[in-house]
Length: 132
Image (cartoon, rainbow, N blue to C red; front, side, top):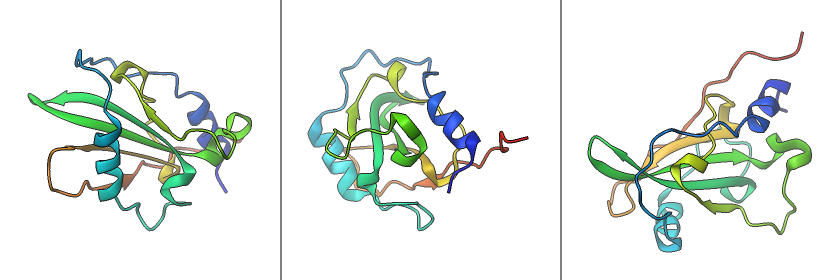
């Protein structure tokens, strides 16, 4: 279902963002609020529960947001977590995966956990295939 390049991207997710807010990681209540408001794009390969979900505080133009990265479990290949493993990861901004493509297997967005606006989610671009 996914190309080799998607797997390479997922494995290469050890490249982290450079900004740091100096704040603690997002709380469970912040994350629960965000998850109650989001709706995955229709092209998503599975439900929210089938994604590894990373949440980190970030600051953009002086405003504090939660930066969210969703990674479809099947992209992780042999690193795919067990079905009963935790899928929610509250991390610092340096620890959040930085993946620039992956199609709907990788979804990134910003959310204001104190706002009432539903976050807009878009699939990442699809990169070139790594197969010869």
